[in-house]
Length: 353
Image (cartoon, rainbow, N blue to C red; front, side, top):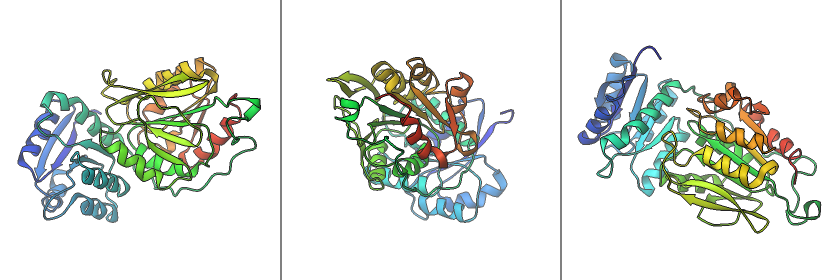
């Protein structure tokens, strides 16, 4: 981007406004053009400052962040919003409500445990992703009928274990994409494992919310648990999730090895471990997201003989991760989000058991 990304910071805490401003000023591609202590002040400043991105606190006295987002949505505002929310159960729920109301991304709110240096790259990454994002229409989940032979009792398929494994990765825009995609899939599929770039504490709330919409179990993964058919596991925020072989099937392994491209969990870590464990039995799916996380992992799945799908540019909020995989030539099929449930079912029929 030849011009700097113009950011307006909205938070009722003067300390947080300063931390965010000082942090973003470290990036030469970003300019903080102003701050506001609540959305009402922001409404007055937006026409004059013309920000490209807003960072938004959720809990403020005169108007909370959720009300403000709904107001922006009603007014058909095109300014992307990065939610900066507290690491609490209430903060997590409000942040997910904000995503449903149109926020682009979530970042954990700075507190005493964050230094400016530790926060800088992550915050700038989120802001740049928001600046590149495109608002997409919200899709309503529609139950997908399984193709012939796609869903069978795992223990008796083909006279033995069904070793197929579904791996998904997403970043910016992925929370809403997964909120559509997962409830659209039928019960009884092979194990599904998901990495969504999301801060610690928010991932559990996200899994619980999606679980309420699905005909099968969706929850946050724990360490060293066996993968089961009809169960979808999300990587916990701030943990890499790996797949390892176990007793003729697979199990999880959680680690806090260093972040990859500011990402922990990393899609590449999941996909590469899944390729090692499942080989040709793996189906890798890469959804909307900033950056290139997942492309190298998808290459590993292809080299192991597995199948790959990526979200089509037309439906991506940010066409970054799928683009990186396409450039490597490792995407079997690019599919718009609305057609992805059917594409997954059909692809499963070509994955050996």
